[in-house]
Amino acid sequence: MLNKFQEEITANWKSMDTEHPLVSIKCLAFNQEEYIAQTMDGFLMQETNFPFEIIVHDDASTDKTADILREYEKKYPLIVKPIYQTENQYSKRDGSLTRASNAPLKGKYVAECEGDDYWTDPNKLQRQVDFLESHPDYSLSAENGNILFTETGVIQPFSNEPERDFSLDDLLIRRRFPTASVLFSRAHLLEYLNQDAPRFDTSQWAFLSTKGKIHYNPVISSVYRRGSGVTENNKIRWSYLSEEFNNEINKFYKPSRTVRKVRDKILFHDFQQGRIAARKKGDKANERKLLLKTVTRFPLLFIKNWIHQKKKHLYLECIKPKIITWATRHLFFKKKKSSSTDKSIIVSLTSYPARFKTLDICIKSLLNQKLPASKIILYLSKDIQIDSLPKSLLKLQRYGLEIRNNCEDLKPHKKYFYAIQEFKDSIVVTADDDVIYPKDWLDSLYKSYLQHPNCISARRVHRITRDINNKAVSYQHWEIECKSVLQPSMNLVAIGVGGVLYPPHIFDSSIQYFNETDIKEICLNADDIWLKYLEAIQGTPVVWVPNKQCHPITIFDNQIKESALFKTNLKENQNDQYIQACAAHFKINL
Image 1 (cartoon, helix red, strand yellow):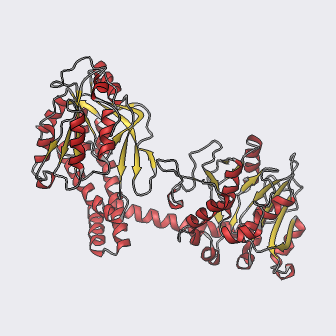
Image 2 (image 1 turned 60 degrees about the vertical axis):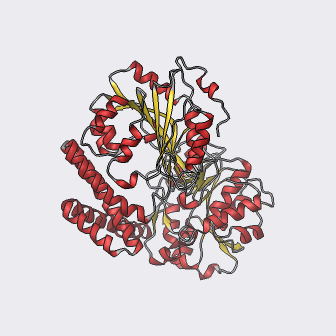
Image 3 (image 1 turned 90 degrees about the horizontal axis):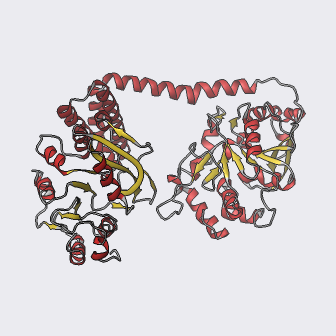
């Protein structure tokens, strides 16, 4: 409970007329004992110069929600005015809940917040009241909020839009702001309730837009909790609810053709997501039902989408890789001079027998760079004999490829482990062995190094997602292939397949970094994670090198697809185990 007395809250009120408050805070609660105290504290921390009331409607909770509310009512009798139901009103589906929760409201303005959401800004109410009082042509003030995914702890903004006004069409297309962020006129609310309008948030905001302008402020002032909204069951359920909402919106508001078109695309997407979720669950009845709805309601859209997906898959997964693989394999080139850069550039990679037959294709793409490397070194395990390698690979030695078979089998770690130690005064760029690198690949990495000489530059990065306590969440919830962070950041993780540049002396060559036994025991198959911990220890940030195709084109070969490490690390959730092992070893969290 908030450590604040009622007298402290009311100290700045210009009026103590609690029978006629300026704002009524409306809160619906049911079985929310885990969250309701935080919700109430968010209300009571508001710093205002006007009286406000808190109308909490407990819909016959079966847990301790009502008991908690009674404690608040006892401590703040002038402000907290709960309604305790003995019979659940929501389940009646006859409008009882709407009538019971809105009838007691007395304020000129109404603010809404569900019993599991909460406010985070003590100036929220004052700021919104000041705006509406000084702008009588506006009917609603809304602000941004954070979404808190309760299952993972991930938190992210509800919206990325700038300050603006929303039109009726804007609001009919999709939700623009969280419910916990709004303040609006009670007179307009009563007018809405007297209409035969659909009873859900989007409809209410749309109706208010017909009574005045809708103002949106991007300041984050609330948190919207989202629980199991991404489960397969909820995707299926939402596809049907989305259709219901869409039908009601079309019937009551009669939106323009443009809005209908956008809403139809959204509904089509919801049907598709629901159908995919049903298939994953083995729910054939709902899969067939949603497929039938999709085909009968959106036949042209369904056909267009099907053709587009097939073409896209055929081009990206088959035609393009085949053409580029063939072209690179038959590439003719002369030996290029080494780069004339201030620092020598060493391109380092490793491989293993399953990849040898196509390895020449990858190395040809490295030899064909606009900015040539000083050296291209292929590090192999001790048990591999150089003369046993394919001739197509061996002949590339005359064009500058160096092959070294003196390494311990450190798997993907071989591509950086030996080069960084041997060429301490040089720039080391690591590459993977199963992709074709574009001609400007090395040049783009080097230009990034010139701008950020104390950072690790990478053309493909993931962003560590953090929970509300700033802790890194599970790897599967990280932002894959992040392109939104343009400055060096400790939250970025360099991913080897895209190419990673390590400046000279970026790692202290101490034994804790270059210890073969530790790598084998702790993080053998996840070099990107191991290296991220080394960067975290030293405070070395990663910077993304902007490019259109972060993951280079994979060499067209079925064996490569089957042997990719990501199948184990990501799909089988091994990365989290490596992260835990590294955290315990290095005694540091990402």
